[in-house]
Image 1 (cartoon, rainbow, N blue to C red):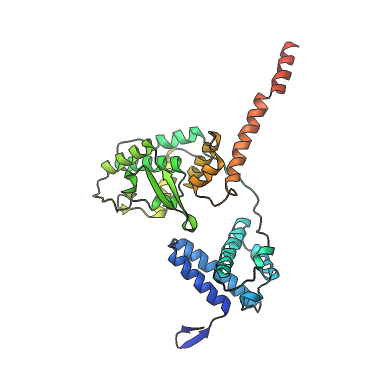
Image 2 (image 1 turned 120 degrees about the vertical axis):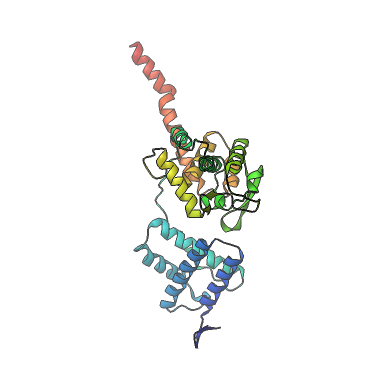
Length: 311
């Protein structure tokens, strides 16, 4: 295929044509602009690397080529980013196979790069209390802050999912959320969250319709980055030692739900994960709780302590 570039026509390789088809499909799936840019950057870098190796056809790609690409990138990025690069390139290749562009599957013999497990803690009840106190007040912006924090804490929504909510969504008991990869799930709003949202909307001085964005500031609808900045400012008002990120509430939702005995499959569905991989980090936090509880309340420990007291 020829691609027009000014007055010149540049021939595209089968790999480049396949990449263009994949990126078009991602646009049709209504991915966010940030995600689309990431797909485009990683996909082009992957295909360009193969081109430098002299590879132009999908059928010519071997596991060795993928390993060479990953090894090259390993010197430049973090383990977490390297794994993300692998996942994106693998998603591109699965698309090519589904579309019948190739039957060659070099990724089947290349293991996903491992990331050293670093489990970030959930928020403590004391921290959550401090955060909610930082949202107290009758000003409509403080009511907005409280509604936002309660929503994130009680639903485990990703911040970009919360950003997409409309005024009409805030009046519902449950929401159909379109998450990563276009996957859909139902999220439920507790009475306390709906009440907080209602108070915020009643106090908001703007004339809003059901189709308007839910989150506003003094100068209009908040961008995604604006909402993230709101969360960080709340953390500063609460006196937290580290910057408060919106994802902390998602971790807290998962960890507290597990501590309260939720079924792992139910949690997976509520959070919109495709498998249990990510949930294992939350399980590790809960297992740490159990280990500490066992150390404190072990029958043998208590027995030894009793003997020592009697002795």
